Length: 191
Image 1 (cartoon, one colour):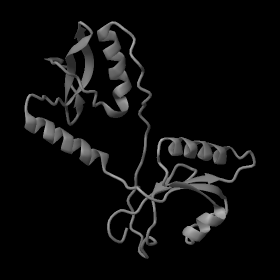
Image 2 (cartoon, one colour; image 1 turned 120 degrees about the vertical axis):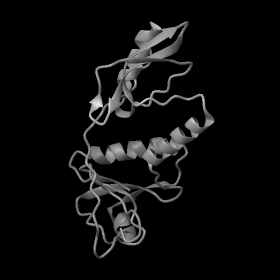
Image 3 (cartoon, one colour; image 1 turned 180 degrees about the vertical axis):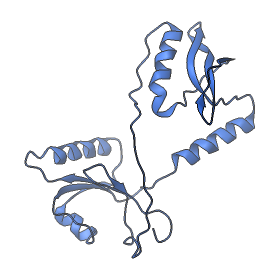
Image 4 (tube, helix red, strand yellow; image 1 turned 180 degrees about the horizontal axis):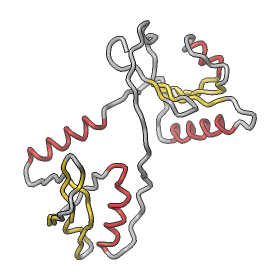
C-alpha cells in the first residue's frame, strides 16, 4: 500500500496516479487507487488525516526475500559445476572480440578487500555487485572498448528495524509505504 500525502500542489497524488497508470499498462490490474474514504473503509485502524490517496495491490501480491533467492541461485549454480564464485572487489575487466574474458579482483576477507590482485579468465561475467554494479558496468565498457548502457543503480544507506507489537498487527495488514519513506510490513506470526 503506497500512500500519497495531501499537499496543496497535489504533486504526490499526481505521481501516484502516474505510477498507477504505468502499472496498469504493464498488466498489474490488481492494483487499485483508493481515496481517503476508501482507505478508511478498508483499513479502519490507520491514521489517514494527512493522506490523499493510496495505491493498493488487492490481488496477486506478495513478497520474497531477495537475499535468500540469491543464495539459492548461487548454491544451484555451484552444484552444476563449471562456475566460480569469487568473494572480492572487482578492480578491472578484460575483453577480446566484443566479449568479456576476465576479471581482476582483490579477494575479500572479513576486514574487506586486500592489496593482492588476482585474475580469473572466464567465458561469462555476471555482475553481482548489487548497489555497486554501475562501476562494474563502466569497467565492462572500458574493457570492450565501446560505450555500454549505464546501470542507473547507486548505493544508499538504509536502516531496517524489527519490532514486536504487543497487541499484534491488524489482520490482513499489507506492506505500507508511508510518504516520508518509512515502510512497515508484518512478518511472521504475531508480527
